[in-house]
Image (cartoon, rainbow, N blue to C red; front, side, top):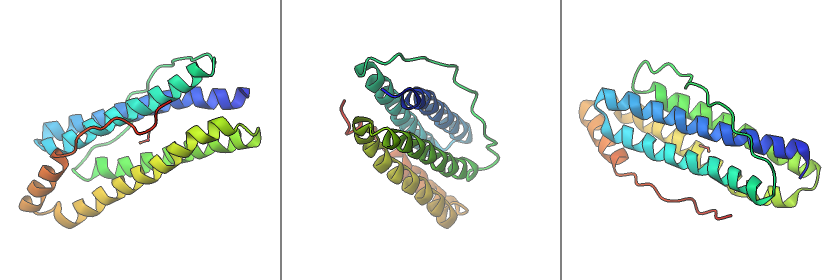
Length: 169
Ligand code: FEO
């Protein structure tokens, strides 16, 4: 595998674990606020991010590439109100989309079609992640300022269940 592509894929393992850590921090915040549905939503999200990390890990392993695990940074976020995690979440997903695009471009440059095929799944996934994050903000803007609305939204998010990723390596 091209060195730069392998390096970026290895870095992405860390970025995805960081995403899991960030979303766990959001869950932690909502738990303290008594919003267990929001907590559940971000716990499921954190699980998905761990899956993403493991997919990159496994892909490198399957390609006989060395995996180097680095320290995971402390979540960098100011959770000042119920909206703050949602906005930080969208911003973070947009950042992750950029990271995936950067790896894709590096793979494209060296005609690494196998890595591009792996990343096709992530490109699609990022589209969904950004939409989910933006939808949450819209719902919170519409209903979040009303106690009954917030209660209903919390119940809706509490119903989210984890499903394993559709991508199998
Ligand atoms: Fe792994 Fe939320 O992107």
